[in-house]
Image 1 (cartoon, rainbow, N blue to C red):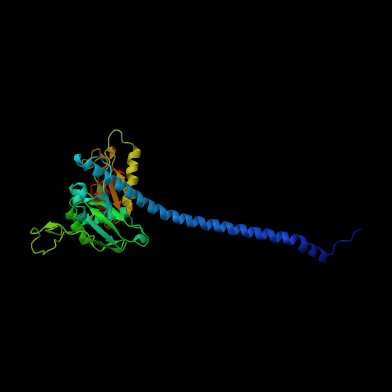
Image 2 (spheres, rainbow, N blue to C red):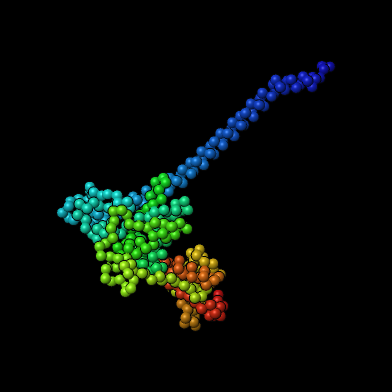
Length: 342
């Protein structure tokens, strides 16, 4: 009978044969873990760079579209005696590409562009402001203060933000010189809680003979040099809002059409105030009730303040090409006559 190996002998064998292989496997696992960690970190960096590059790419694409549109306008308005459409001389005016003065293009929109541009400073990029959100806020602020020539038309034609590292400025173009003058009064407007500078670019001058967008001699009596524009703020008188015939109902209107409108109103209006219920009038609701029309929508808000916020944010917009018409509806009448129908 062979003798059993001693414990001491087994330990020596393990150290000499097994341990090196085990340690090698541990080293391999650690190396793989490090490689996976490095790959993960590289992916995260690439993802962050991609998000930044996507923003820059979107900005470049907008500029390409604007330049293409501008070139189309130039080509359309070129005089017949000036030859073909190629070789148009353009220059960057800080906002978009426009034709040089020697091109013979004399249409009003190009001639007055310099006086319709505004410089925007201290833009809160870090809080997520975008060209679209700034355009929307500037329009709504101008509309609420009766600064728009047409309250149903956004006078902000274009907004351009500088995307260079460390930049926080941009430019915008307004539809008319009068509205541009009025917009200057909004210097210091709060955007996401940050005061934004709204001024004329260095190369622009105020149109001669204009004060606050009004010809000299046309100011209101006793108002001095600057026209005091009235503030027209919409205020609800009830927590119930009636939207007049937002859906054009006919024989082809389906339940899905009604549901789509309800969902759109819940999401769109609910983003600006708390809603208790959204009800849309169908043909059978309007039977025998001359005050109701199929397609009307009733929004029941939690408070009158919620209703005011919704009316100010949504009242000027269009839905499916139709202007939204919002009015306050008496709460008692809604509870006794309208709500039981639903």
